[in-house]
Length: 78
Image (cartoon, rainbow, N blue to C red; front, top):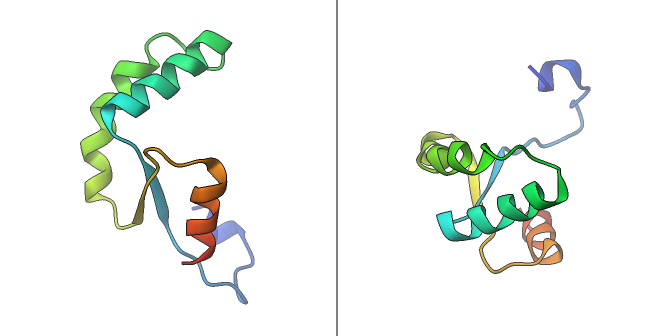
């Protein structure tokens, strides 16, 4: 739906999923909850969705132990 609203005639579109293991995901979400960015129930809902990412037709990028710069560099190489 998003792509249908964009002019992508001169673009190569790639679908990417940024994934993390349960431990890292929990740590990141708890940090967001502490900052008031997310609701307290976000952790359980997000962890429950981890297996669903494997079914998506996307390029998976494992973000565990990586900085934002490292992840963006990996995306640029695609």
